[in-house]
Amino acid sequence: MNCKEDQKVLISTFEKEVCEGLSAFPKYLSSKYFYDEVGDVLFQKIMELPEYYLTRTEYEIFKTNTSDIVKSFDTDKEGFDLIELGAGDGKKTKILLQELQENDYDFTYMPIDISQNAIDGLVKGLDREMPGVSVQGQIGEYFEVLDRLKHMSDRKKVIMVLGSNIGNLLHPRAIQFLRKLCNAMHTDDLLFMGFDQKKHPQKVLDAYNDKTGVTAAFNKNVLARINKELNGNFDLDKFMHWETYDPESGTAKSYLVSKEKQTVDIDDLSLQVHFEAWESIHTEISQKYDDDIVKWLSEESGLNILRSFTDKNEDYKNYLITK
Ligand code: AVJ
Image 1 (cartoon, rainbow, N blue to C red):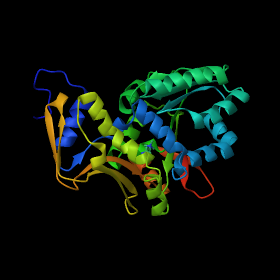
Image 2 (image 1 turned 120 degrees about the vertical axis):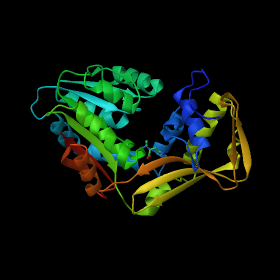
Image 3 (image 1 turned 45 degrees about the vertical axis):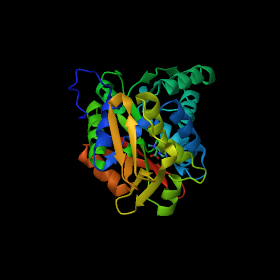
Image 4 (image 1 turned 90 degrees about the vertical axis):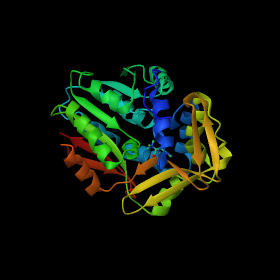
């Protein structure tokens, strides 16, 4: 079957992308499909793993620089909208919200996430924990939301993208993403972004290959979703999670490797997928950065770095960026 919509049947993006990725050579699937209810819970567990330093480190940066960060958002004290792309559970952002509220800043928090679940939970939680904060939650996917961004607010915007979420994009797509952000920004608007830094390669590998196998289950969740949503018959035990990290490019890559020669049926796509023994499906990239790479990405996108905040080991950095 070819994967185009030529059968007069409307097919979803998920169906189309699964079909394309598993018909390609080498095979691939997008990491955005990790996140359904099961995937959200697994990612929550990942953030608690001792090996997964990213969340903890960004939290530490926020804790130790709260007042500095918040002051840098609203230099003229004229109020602003704090827009967060991929807000998730908002745990780190709450540190900033607390500080903003205590110091009577004039702001509205606008969290955006692809997960309806996440947004509902976050908005409800905030209503309870910080009733004074004005919150407007929205559902949306990264690139799609960018088109709405410009008209989302009529005052100064501070746009946050935390968790090194940009790391899921290869540089050319990251530049596309940043250019769109730049396009939606006015001169005074700010971008506050987390970029995981290059570090000991073993530390990176361990973060994506934890001992308890949570990351493996997270990676395999994309196959579980195909089974559930597209009537597939992947045997998850016949695939193994494999992680690589190239210190030169700074790219960590996740794969699912077929442990044997096998054929998988995906009924809803009328698709049979053949795997040779040890054939791979590439599922995710998690890019690592340094100052030079972030500077290069910014320049390519029409943006300028104002300053950055980091932890004591410089494992992770949050950059404040302007047009
Ligand atoms: C949410 C994209 C930042 O790449 O570090 C965690 C996702 N994947 N463990 C990352 C992830 C495997 C995470 N991001």
